[in-house]
Image 1 (cartoon, rainbow, N blue to C red):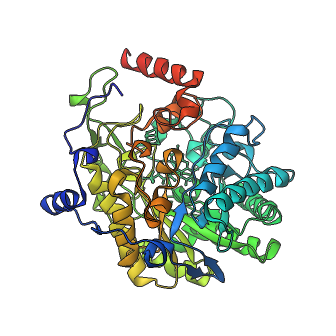
Image 2 (cartoon, rainbow, N blue to C red; image 1 turned 60 degrees about the vertical axis):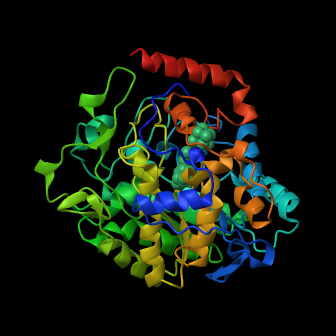
Length: 493
Ligand SMILES: Cc1cc2nc3c(=O)[nH]c(=O)nc-3n(C[C@H](O)[C@H](O)[C@H](O)COP(=O)(O)O)c2cc1C
Ligand code: SF4
């Protein structure tokens, strides 16, 4: 990929599962990993699980994966439809959200993000139908297939009108992130009244999703977008900031309204359960076009740190799940049992959110072995899973595991560290990776995601997302040349 290689072991270079297990042991990385894959009725990955009156037919989940490829008025294109087909082809029985859909125009993360409105029902129903069609082709039955839609407002990362022109709406002023998105006055801070209006937009969006046949909606609370930012609104006054009760009011009021407009619709939450301070490339080890390893932004003058959820205020590089446990209790009261655990943000600490060997163009070289990042995800899930047994927890961060993904996924489910294993990037290249493993089919190694990060780099350069290195659809298109040109231009600046 023409990128400087970091100094960590490439997983493709480990010859077998035993070598991988030894590598984990030697490096003190706590990940479960089964030597033998079980298949068919014996596979832990193919066992059903019940939650909230729903039966999810197996333990394979597909994470929401947006493509920056909708029309300017927020409708799906053929590229969107193709992606949803691939979600279906995975054999996963839990489709977590499809992709982030903005509940209104000003909350779109890019001018090509899907946007839901009163007339979106038909488009959404079609996405759902094509997904089911492919699912049937792979599995032969739609029994136990549970499909959700992820609803969002992009908040600080809103960019609804022009690519590259941020139009942030934030929960509070942030001492590090404001300057990255051009917030220089309180005008960008949403008032309580504006938040109340936005909550009504979520209610309306959920009703459209219910009418289009979705089983649940995900009230997105992750990755630095508005729902997630409100969870850390310690410094905000009014009804939506300060105490945890206030910081979760947004979620509560959305949930209450959905229960009344769409009583049969289930609700899930995708949550960045821990975070860390924003990272940047180490200036001392970067050169033009070649970002150095990630280092945290200086924060010593900001202690105790009050701008994160799930961080230790005295050492904000360290996860602290105390409030996550409180939030889980609140979700129990709200009768929300479907929880997708993720962490951090792709904008300000991508190594936490999606561990990768190669950084995206606006990122930095990995500051740690990406396996450490995977283990951090898995360990947080394990802690929550042990305390809240009635929930169904979906785990994140597995794509980095490559050849060993099925072995770790099987062990994590078997040991009850997690209920369902979510697939993100790998679904763009090899949607059936776990389905194949659980049916004793040989792994198609050439299709494994190698975490080249082009699916993140492309949208950062105004192009649709997709797997440019491995998926013929993008590899052979003129988009590939445009991505190469954009990367070359960055290297020379
Ligand atoms: C191209 C791309 C698009 C994504 N879109 C979404 C999204 O719409 N909603 C969301 O919650 N996460 C999104 N994510 C994050 C993934 O769902 C997932 O958390 C992340 O890729 C880590 O999982 P993995 O290691 O399996 O890739 C996206 C990630 C990528 C790379
Ligand atoms: S571009 Fe392809 S190989 Fe690279 S991270 Fe994305 S899905 Fe994986």
